[in-house]
Length: 111
Length: 118
Image: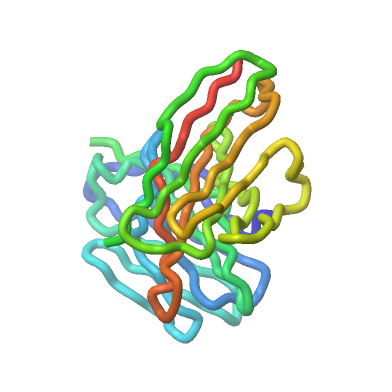
């Protein structure tokens, strides 16, 4: 089953602009993760945010988590053409250890 | 960091044949591994949870007799697609977690196996 919904489904921006992707989920979670996937390739783990955390940074990435709204956002600042990829959120449900993926956002950064 | 490998990285087969995909945790023991399937331009869909020494747990809608999972050791899980058909063509990805503690939060994904059934 798929838990998360992401928006937008696709995003096209110019290099240097910021990109914001949103993810919503349905159940209580232990943590939420963001992954990146280049076309036809494997997943790259970007960042994990726990249910008791509200914001986390890693380089040009900023992730927020609002458990009351069951939503998260991923912000990529000063985007580069190399950031072009699909981005997925994934959640670990409370009491379980399956990871369920959202639908993903396809980001295209134009040079 | 922990590494998970998959073999083969891609396979082309004729309709009706069976295909085995291996998932190995290279530098840690994984009591639990997960198998996902990803169709083009779609997200990863969890197929099953593979438990070492016991039967796999399949997600709703996944045929356990078609997708045979064996997790015979702490470092190896295999997925066999039996009597493969063109609609089984997909990208199959496995993952594994570290056994315990906070490290168990993180999943390590294999590079994926692309299956094309003609």
